Amino acid sequence: MDKITEVNLSDLSLPSFQLHSDIPQPYIHEIADSIKTHGIIEPLIVRHTDNGKEIVCGCVRYQASILAGRKSVPCIIKSLSPEEAESLKIHENLKRLPTNDVDQGYFFIMLIEKFNWTAHSISDDIGKSRPYVSQRISLVRHNSEITKAVKDGSITISHARELIRLDDPFERKRLLHSCQYDGLPVNLLQRCVEDELRRLKYLPPAAESPPDEIHSDNSPYLTRNCEACLNPFEIVNIRHVFFCIDCRKAILDAISDERNKSSPNTPEKDS
Image (cartoon, rainbow, N blue to C red; front, side, top):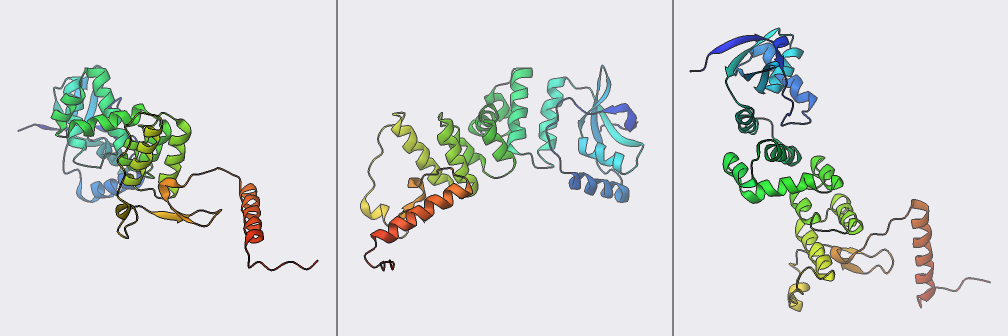
């Protein structure tokens, strides 16, 4: 059984790389309140380094203990290499506060660059599939806008996986905007991306769908009306054009005037 030692908070230091980059303050305060009432139920895990005692597992409990006014915390001191410490860190932390996909991606890259791990060895160690690991690595190595959107929750990693297939920054940004503000589902995004790649000759031509499949009442494809002709179109066939509020209103007013002129039922204005 591991020996538990009471260690002064002033003798502990946070690790240089933390798995959670942005821990919500309300969560830390909630843990601090629990510590005031019940104490620290599970000891921190620390290791000796050249700079003293470094926390391996328990960074949140450490910060919460400071808020709770404690001077010391119970610790288990282990003899761990830097690599062993990182492996233990991810196993312990993934059981606690959910880790977002972006933080995981940065952590996997750190293991690769610092300890020469591979996506295969990471997947074996954490019990996840290789695509799971590779997707999160690709996410943080790719476009920063997409990374930010995943981290703030406005798109999922499934959306990101499709978006990073595109090289064209304008088309990528257009579709990212559709995902964030129009609620473009992943299955429609995939169609948009494949249409674009096919247009650029990256993919073979798609097989034509039977007409009854395209127009079926049970079709999963969402539609919206064009603001110019007012006809309904599948979202994948709607294109964004970016105007300021005044220009957009002027253009829509002009389109409306033209539509009224061409309508046979439009009454003539008095001269």
